Length: 203
Image (cartoon, helix red, strand yellow):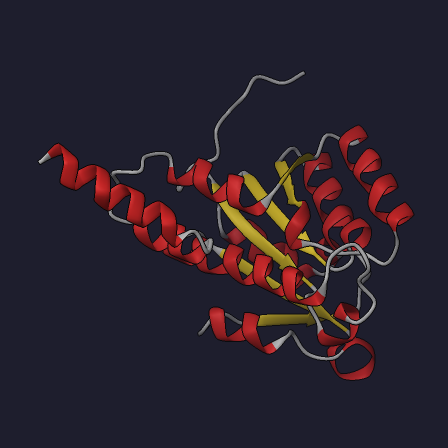
């Protein structure tokens, strides 16, 4: 057991691996619509919190196609690094991009969960970093793959969570000016409404 050390705006980065059109078609643990929603929400919240974001694809032009358009639209100006390696961390350009963030807590999401999120997350742990996987912003191709990959990652020291909890942990304080944008990105507009009502009642 490790002592809890919170994610913050200053220690965390987000790594999005292989959310590609071709891979999306094989996902079975989430519907396409739900998975797209979750990944885009994660990306938008991370941008609202001004977190470094690294995005990568594999074999974009030969096998798995481009990043799905909604995610590209949510990440204007961010380069998508295409590679051939199975483990994203094995690509020197991806490794350099991650290292360039200067962050020690890395939040991974990918398709597939066990390879695209799992392999680099376990590699990060082996390199002395803290790795988190946003399970519901990742997807895989069978129930078995989903379940055994969670066991394997936990055994390797990866921290598992959902995307919204990770972003709210980084937000930390609902009085921050970014709170409205974060909750809106997470598709929780009711949170903003509740805050407005509470503020009005205090007056």
